[in-house]
Image 1 (spheres, rainbow, N blue to C red):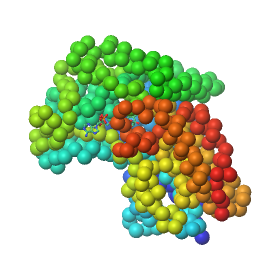
Image 2: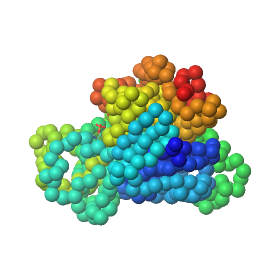
Image 3: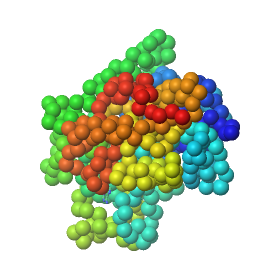
Image 4: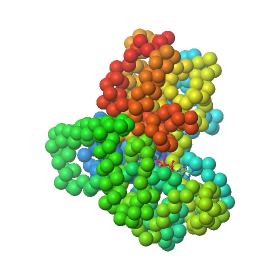
Length: 481
Ligand code: NAP
C-alpha cells in the first residue's frame, strides 16, 4: 500500500495551492516534486528585466492568503515569488516540497500511480496532481541557424543575467507579453535594440502605481478593505469577458481603447501602421503596458516587420534577404503550449498514454480530469486559460473541485475516480461550440490553438461561471471503484 496520499508535480501556483488544500482536507501525506531548485513556477523561471504580472496583484494571489503588503498594483516577479515562499511557510507545507526531483513518467497500475523520477527513483500514491500548467517549456519557434550565432543567445524565460547589454546591439525576436516588458528595460542601456515583430498586438495602458505605506497600512488595518478591493477587481475584470465575444459592442469599445492608446503614444504614422493589429481584439492575448510604445518610439529602437528567416553567425536574416547584425539575441518566442504535460510519459488504464488520448488535441473534463486516467487531476489544464481575468481564480476552483471529489470518494469507501468518456465528450463538444463565438476563434494564430485550429487552451466563459460549476463535482459523471 502506498504511504503517500498524493503526489503533486510542479511547485508553481497550482502545486502550492494543491498542497495546502489537500493537507487541510486531511490528505496530508503528500509530496510536491519539482525539477528546479526552489518553488515559484513561472515566477522562478521568468526573471527578465521588467518581469511582472499583467494582472493586478490583489487578484493575482490566493483568496485564502491575501497580501495587504503588495508594493505595487502590478508587482514584479521577485515579490510574487517571495509571496509564494511566504504562503508555503504560513500554511505549513514547506517540508512537502522536494526540489531537483524531475519526473520522467507516471503509470497507473489499477489502484495507484507510480511516479518515476529521471534518477530512477519511484514513488507511489493513489492520487496524482499535475501543477505543470501551460507555460513551462520555452519555445524557440524552430527558427534555424541558432547554433551558428557567435554571440550570446537566450530565451526570455532563461534570462542570462551575466550578459551585460549596455551599449550592445540587441536583437529581440518576438513582440509578445514577455517582450513588451523587457524591451523598454533593455532599451534604456543598450546601444540599439532591433525588435523583430511578426504580428502586432493590441496594447492597453496598465496604469501601474506604487502602493504607498499609508495605503498598505489601510489594507492591513481596515477590516474587509483588501477583500472588497479584490472582489471589485474580480467583478470588473470578469465583465470584460464580453469584449472577447466577436462582434459585440464591448469588443468594439475595447478595440477603440487600444487603438486610441496607440494613436496617442506613437506620432510617426509609419511606425503606428506597423504596430496596428488587423485581427479581432482578444484573438491573441491583449497586452498591458505603460512603456512599450514609448520605448518603440526611442531613437535607439528599430522595428523590423519582415519575417525572420534564420539566425546567422552575426545576427538575423529576414525574409527579404537583409542581414541585421546583432551582438546579443533574445528570443521572446513564447512556450510550447498545446502538448500539455509533455515530455512526461503518463500511462493510464489499459496502457493508454496521454499522448495517444490527446493525439487530436488535448482535452479534459472541465480541464481537470481525463477519461482513462483515474485519480489524475490537472491544474491549469486544457481549456482553462483566460484572456480577461486572473488564472489564480481558476486554479483555486480546480483544487477545490479535486478536494471535494476526493472527499466524496473517501466517504464512499472507494479508491478510484474515473470520469466517464461520454461526460468528457459531451462537455468538450459544448465547450468547442461555445468557443466558436469567442475572439480566440478569430483570424489570427495564437498559442491558444493547435496547428489545425482546435482551441485547446482557453475557457469559453467568464470565471464566475467556471467557479460556480466547479463548486460541486457532478459525481454522476464519474465512475467510482
Ligand atoms: P507570446 O506572447 O506567445 O509571444 C511570442 C512572440 O514570439 C510573438 O510575438 C510571436 O509572434 C513571436 N514568434 C513566434 N514564432 C515566431 C517566428 N517564427 N518568427 C518571429 N516571431 C515569432 O509569448 P510570451 O511573450 O512568452 O508570453 C506567453 C504567455 O505568457 C502570455 O500570453 C501570457 O499568458 C504569459 N505571460 C504573462 C505575463 C504576465 O505578466 N502575467 C508576462 C509574460 C507572459 P506571433 O504573434 O506572430 O505569433
